[in-house]
Amino acid sequence: MRAQLSSIRADGSRLPIHPLEVKGRWVTRRRLTFALLIAIYVAAPLVKIGGHPAVHLDVAARRFYLLGGTFNAQDFWMVLLLATGFLFSVLFVTAWRGRLWCGWGCPQTVFLEAVYRPIERLFDGPASRRLKQHETPWALGRVARTAGKFATYAVVSAGLAHVATSLFVSAHELRGMISDGPHAHPEAFAWTTAFTALLFFNFGWFREQFCVVLCPYGRLQSVLHDRRSITVAYDAARGEPRGKVAKGNGDCVDCKKCVQACPTAIDIRDGLQMECLACAQCIDACDDVMAKVGRQKGLIRYTSQAELAGQPRRVFRPRLLLYAALATAAATTLTVSLVGRTPFEANVLRLRGVPFVIDGDRVRNQLEVHLVNKRSDAAELKLSVRGPDGLEVQLARDAVALGSLEDARVPLVVSLPKGQVHGKLLLELVVTDTGSGLERRAPIPFIAP
Amino acid sequence: MSDNKVHAVFDGIEEEDNHLPNWWLATLFLAMVFAFGYWFLYHSTVWLDTPAREYAKEAEAQKKRLALQNPMSDESLAALANDPRAVEEGKKTFTTICVACHKADGSGSVGPNLTDRYWLHGNKPTDLYGAVMTGFQDKGMPPWGPQLGEKRTREVVAFVLSIRNSEVPGGKAPQGDLKE
Image 1 (cartoon, chains in turn cyan, brown):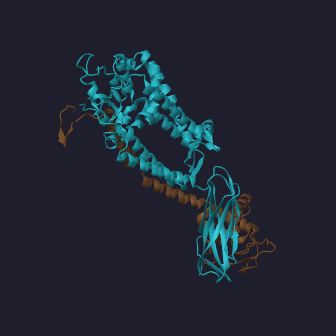
Image 2 (spheres, rainbow over the protein chains, first blue to last red):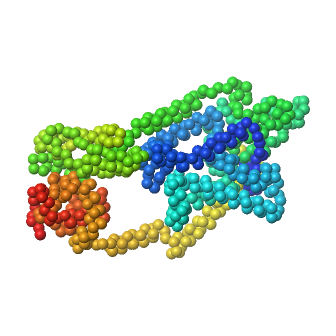
């Protein structure tokens, strides 16, 4: 059994990892997934839904446009539902199908395998040549190739960083900022530059070290998996003893293609390890060899420890049902909260000072209506107050025009004849959205001696 | 180091002593260098300020700025009433907030008429400023300072100064003392 991190040599130095380029059904499916995910990332700030970008997280103004919905800071509590729903979904998927996230969805994998490694291959050739290049002297050719490679990394990193910035300032705004120049927008420039540098360092050099040393998710796999979790696994019963194609030997011909194809340089034949990103590249590498030597594919495959031990596949088990129930509960609550959102908020607050004023033969209450337009476009809200006979109402404004996510405070003075009310009475504020005709009522607590 | 010797066994888990990744060690050493530089620059020289020193400096600067910035006086507020922009801004605030009690033209309803020559709490510009800022809570005038802030309060006062003594017809009956 290995007693050392696979990507670190005994003296602590980095082992250069250049995974063998393999072809196969999983690699193809992964490429399509990567293309789709990158397309979503780039489209998020560019595609407009309902007049706003699909994703525009205006943190500075605390206005958040998400897939046509408009949210303000008061809606932040919904992030709890979003986060718990996401967390339990991740737990569910991990317990059911292993670390699919690492191999198929994590930006670290997506950008490394779909963007940066292809660039490296373009300049330095296939993995075998790249591995050999580490031993060659720094001749002009190697220097030029390396310079070209890192320059391309830098350009691509800057592009990806600009997409990230535009998620926060919108693509349109970013275009304006770029034409104004860095001196006009030092903060946005600093963020974009820092993110460019981070991407460049991470994908140009740090790579799998993030997964095997920094990321906590992989380290949780021992508690998230059970014997029935479907992971990338080597069928030792079929494969051992490894060796040449000969009688008495197992199916594994010990070609080490699975090790060469691994982006974290582990040997999957040692069993499931913390470094395994479940990328399935070893599956395709092995299937290719099995086909060549005329043996059945699937010596390394998506399977579970229980199945490898001869037990039947069983999906439903208490922990999966629990994770699924919790994820569904969070998703349902979120959906209900999203559907139940009103296009505007109207709250009645009491103005500072005494709760009521006695003015001659009348009792007066002084309040304030706080209105927030939560639609993605402008709205006009009409205000009126209902109450018993003798009620006098003075509203600072009875119609308020508000832009998207703008708010207004409207002072409201109500009075009733002295003696008509003792203690507390609820009046009613009616707010009408003139555009949609939608009406909302809010109670106005009237206080009298 | 990294001798593949087992150094400790607990619960069947064997602990060896592998070399740490060199890049990881580099972050440790860089942190040490940074800590030394930080200590030297912030705590041993005057080139960079610790948070406490920075706070003291900023508080001092703020104090100076406030002292210089348009000292509140009858004269400065009266001068502001001649600044059409300030009056215009003040009017905006007046017609969205004060209007509830004083009417858009200031002729008064629940609150007193601001366009006549009679005043309950004085008619000096600083009296008006104090009235808006801190209110007369027992009479029903709330303190608007916290919501409006200093600038918008000054502008509202400028607007009120621009309409006072204009005797809007049909205004609320005079309250308080005659002031000229």
